[in-house]
Amino acid sequence: MIVLFLILYGLMARSMKVCKGGIYEDYLSKENTQSIKGVFIIIVFMSHVRGYAEYSAISDQFVISILDYLGQFMVAMFLFCSGYGVFESFKRKGDQYINSFPKNRICNTYFDFVIALILWLIFDLVTQTKYSLRTIVLSFTGWDNIGNSSWYMFVIFTLYIITFVCFKFFKSKPIIAIIAVVIFSLIYIYIIRQVRPSHWSNTCLCYSFGLLWSYFGEYINRFLKHIKTYRYYILLCLLFVVYNFLFDLRYSRLMAFNIASITFCLLIIVVMMKISFKSKILLWCGNNLFWIYILQRIPMAFFYQIGINEYNRYLYLFLCVIFTGILTQFVSTKSEILKRKIWKIQS
Image (cartoon, rainbow, N blue to C red):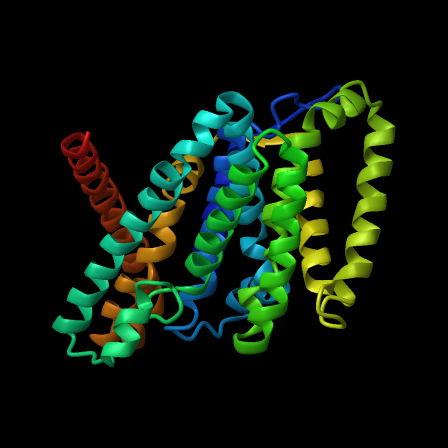
């Protein structure tokens, strides 16, 4: 575990660039957001892999303590970047983007999700892992799972559908559409907390925060563009204090975790204003976030079943990393080719 953590640290340290005066104007560019998503998907990978092998060394426990501290916050930036990216695309393309949203966002993502589920069904068949027909059917909605991580996909599909409906209805008034997304997200949080564990809803509002940041981004950037260095660090310190205060309260109320998650995203964003990472590996991980997230448990489960984790937990970790990368590259490439053929036939 510590080896993968040090590799991540090395990637960040080697590619890190610090803005000496003011802030980076492109701190939320596609390259920067994909890189930071790459950082967090590696953290998610470490969080998942420890569920299959015991890492008890003192150095490994240090990494695990960091993972425990981050907890559900490790997916907060995924939701923020998704919401931010949606409204950035809307600003560039307007109604055309909303009209194509069902196909380009919802259907494309769901198509990839189905491909991943088919791979999981094949894996379960080979390993003779049995699930009820109800579980299999519900897994295609994200409501249940057949070994894969499903809750995040259910959340993101729900948010995408809410976004499309709200922006279609209020397409000439984007701020009203965003407010509507927030309201429906709050309704979702209240309902889902009655029937599902808290992680199905406790970072949900980070998506709406991404929409809002994109909407007010011009005003925010204008305000911060010429910020003096000492004022930036004062802002960063104050934000860190607020974050720590909210972090301690995150389990106290229904909405406390969402507010703390938003503050965590805000803290990361402010850091990104001053620091960027230009690593090709982190960028690749960010670009392939969906596939890494949805496929990583296949190698983990496979090498667990044949006992590699008991033979050598570090060999197990190495094999999981390598085969997740290979599987991600292969499946993502084939999926894109297949989607292009399908859309070409339909058009």
